[in-house]
Length: 170
Image 1 (spheres, helix red, strand yellow):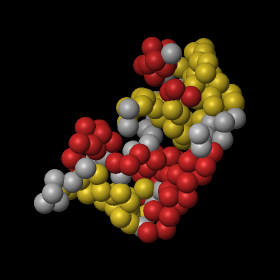
Image 2: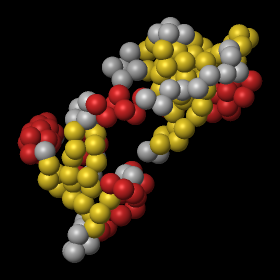
Image 3: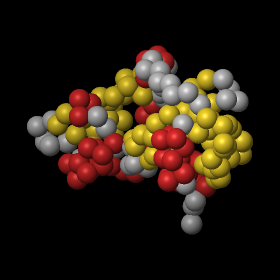
């Protein structure tokens, strides 16, 4: 699949993809693949979506099928303002991690978001959307994360962890 996407980007050919969106729906899209980027341990395709007549980002692992079409597209640039739009719906979060989490901290956060306190613990100050993805992401750190700010996020994660415990009682 990776090779097909790369080939389509280089040759400026459209792709027909079958994709699982964030709601779990299987959808078909015709896209003009512009660029592949690797972020947070995953490959993404930045593309112009013909179905939506807009620029979109598709996670490679959620593409079930890919077919290179015979239709060509004119090269174009993916807009830069995407990051600003995302930031508009975000909040600053502050997290604490023990030193032993260094490998994951440096893999998953930007260098300018990472600080260390006198004990060697990592203090992360990042701007992120507070949504279901973030809750699951924070839970993936298990007992190795301490949410400092915002306080209401700490309560949301606590309640979700409580539900997990209740659902999995031995």
